[in-house]
Length: 202
Image (cartoon, rainbow, N blue to C red):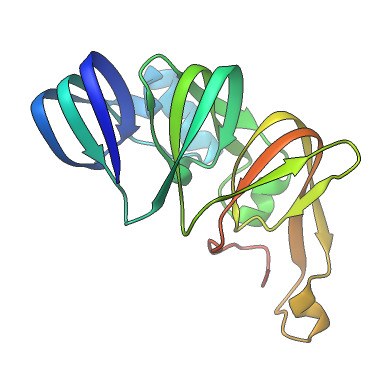
């Protein structure tokens, strides 16, 4: 559970994620992740569905979603790329949008776009189990199971690739395996539990 102390400021949170609050709070549903009609249409076309509410007030507001682990990510003018289903809330001043991520969406079933969070402030991302932060450097690229991917930030290039997994080698794979390959300099957040994918038994 995430407790946010508020002194008249605002946060943007996943609709329905408020579980309790004390003090005075006002809640306002926002269309398309807070980007108006254009943002709503873009998200529907790209498959990145996201219903957001704006919370403003004085006191403490508590957020949670399906008992997920919550991880705070600090942004300092940079950009965070995160699956919409893994984004819980952001500081009110952070900008959200969508970004094309290529063929990766074909493996995850979550569309060809992902949600972006940009600016200075904090974003709360969720994971099934404690999130693991993995470093990527030019010398050490990283391949990630799409079902375990949560988010990434930094100067990273990503590509979609097929390959062989340990389960495939053991004869337990049910189809072709897919991974996301990250190259460059940055960090990738993964979870120790996989979402269902349409790219085969991964």
